[in-house]
Image (cartoon, rainbow, N blue to C red; front, side):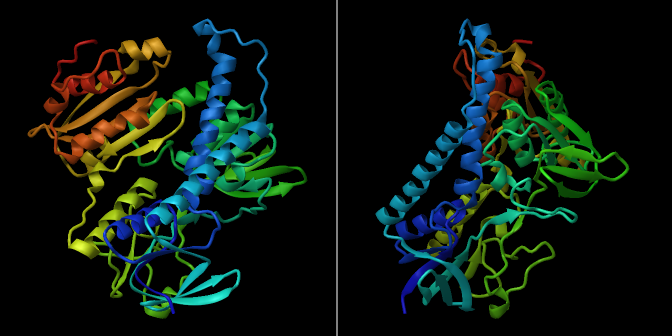
Length: 461
C-alpha cells in the first residue's frame, strides 16, 4: 500500500498549491484528483476560461464600438465564435499541462480518481482501473465547490444550465436570462451581451453584487445598463422550464419571461459529498461546510480542510493562501492568512474590485471612519486610454488613519487593488498611501488621489 506524509484531495488552486508547497517543505506529497486535467473548477471550467471569453468578447465590443474614436477603422467586424471558444480551450489546456509539469518538477505523486476516507489515515481511490488504497500521515481536503441549485429549475445542460455550459454554447443566443447578479452572472452575462444576446439579469435582492460596496455597485449597475444589460431586482424566481427550443422563467408577481437560454448563477456550494466524511465522524455545518480551527485542522486528528469547503469567500486566491498556510503550519508550527487583505474582483468592463471592509461593514460594527474617493474621469491616463467610468474609494479609521477598505470601479481595477491589499497587509495609513509617489501618467494615481481625499486634500479635483 502506497504511503505518503501528506495527501491532498483535489487539484484546484488550493489543492495543487498546497501540494507543491508541501513538497517544497520536504513532505512526501501526493494529490488525488478525479478529473484527468489538473487545476480544478477554476482553471478548467471557471476563472480562466471565463476570463479568456471576457477578454475576447470585450475586444469584439471595442472593435465595433470604440476603435473608430481612436482613429482605427476596421471596416466590417464579424464574430468567429468557434475560434473564440477554441482560444479559450487552448488557454485552459496550456495551463492544466503547466500544473502537471509543476507536479513533476516538485515530485508530487498524482492519483487520478475519486477519493473516499476508509479511516482518517487511509483513503480509497476509485480510478479507471479499479480501487487502490493509500495511507497518509496528514490529509488536506481541498475539493472546492459546485454550482448551487435552485428549487424549480430543470437543468438540462443545454437550454437551462450553469456557468459550465455557458462557457461553451456553440452559438450566441438571441435572448438570455441570467439568474443572479453576482460575479458569475454579471461576467457571463456581459460576455454574451457583447456578442449580441439580449440579456436580462434577475436578482432576488434589491441590489447587484451583494457583498461589494453598495455605492459602487449602484454606479456599476448604471454603467452595465448603458451597455445593454437589463436588470430586474427584487425578483423571486419560482421556476425555469424548457419549452421546445426556448425556456420559460416564472417570477413571483410578474409576467413570465421567455428566452432562448437560461443561466443559473446563484452562487456555489461546498463539494463535500461522497468523501466518506461520515465514516471518520466528521460532521458538516448547516451549509455543508467542514468546520476547522484557526489552523485549518478539523476535529479529526491528521485531517485538515481549506478553500471552498470551509467558511469564507469562495475565491481561488483565498484557497491558495489557506493551502500554503495549512501545510506550513503542519511543518513549522506557523501559518496565517489575513482575511482582511483578501481582494475580490469582478471582471466585467469596467472591473469591480474590493479589499477590506465596506462602508456597510463599518456602520454595522460602529467603527468611526472617513472616506475619500476620486473619479477615473479626472485622471490623465484614464482619459488617454478612453476608460473614464468609475472611481476609487478608500475608507480609513477616523482616529488612527489606518486603511480599513478600498473599493474600485474602473479599468484594471483587478490590478490596482493589489496595491491596496499590500497596504492593508502592512497596516498602512491613508497618509502612507497619499505620500507614496505614483508614476505619472498612470491609473494608480487615482488610488493616491483617493487617499489624499480621505484627508480633504485631493489635488486634481
